[in-house]
Length: 399
Ligand SMILES: [Zn+2]
Image 1 (cartoon, helix red, strand yellow):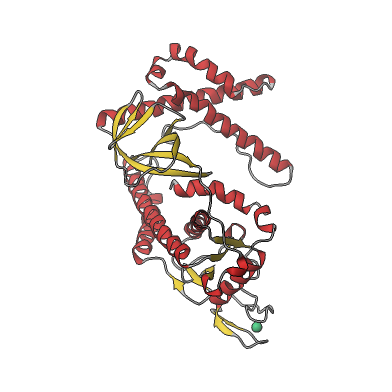
Image 2 (cartoon, protein in one colour):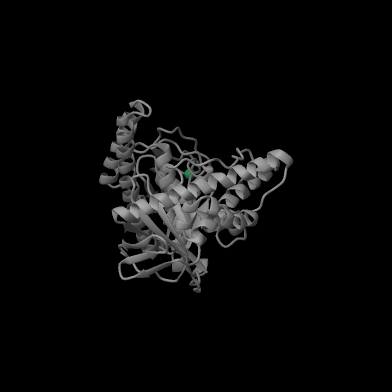
């Protein structure tokens, strides 16, 4: 079973936009109302109100708040479900904390009008025909279906971005047999590649090929950093600040789209050209600041890269194996001895076996060797990374 999210831009009319905004607003009210109820009940006598209890209250609430009648019932029912998920995540984190994981449990919070930005049609209430998406209680909205939806639609999420654009995200499931991966011993060496997250280039392969961030993306990222700096200087709650918020959000959105586009092309080409791809699992690496990108952008780009790589490899019957990057930089890829080097040392020069090559290429070779040696052993699927990835995959795709 493959899960996918397809995202399309919506073009609501002005009236439809108003209805959508109103619907979000009512759902936001309902969310906060139910949150308060759960909170009060717990504080008062430690009772827990369930999601089911709250769904049952909706008909009564509709009488008190007639605007709720303007909303499709399943959309309304999704609100307490969403709140319930927030609570479940909270309880999970509390338990994890008790087991030694150090993180803030983060009690579910009240949502401001701007933060509540999506509606869910869980099963029905929507129909797609030609270039129209008909939403129950909202209307027929123009949609641009730039690619075909394959599989059966499970849920539909209507989302407003912080640049006030509207999107429809369809979650679908495809029942399909995944192709078999070839046996490791049958893969020719030339079809294997190791990739290293470089300090100067975006990535370096084990044959020394460097892949840079495209210039247009770098330009956008620099511009984003500039406008973000300007924005932080604007007075709080001033008119100029709101204007500049929108400006920042627009550039942010454009940059994100460009980055995703670049990463799609890059992963497509890796999957097309290789059967086995070894990469560093940066979830466990402390990234060092890249020359062009801030740490957060760089981490996000790498995270997305290997999410994409993993699901594309899975669907193409190829190998994508993440390894622990520890020591991949300081190990000599030829004699395996440790050769310490500072951050500024760009070349790996081994005093033991006399190997000389670029720092990143040496790391990429180690990554490939490590990936090949761990692949096929039980450790890979058991380490939990794959599981994290499959949930992250959904997020990557819906960006
Ligand atoms: Zn050596």
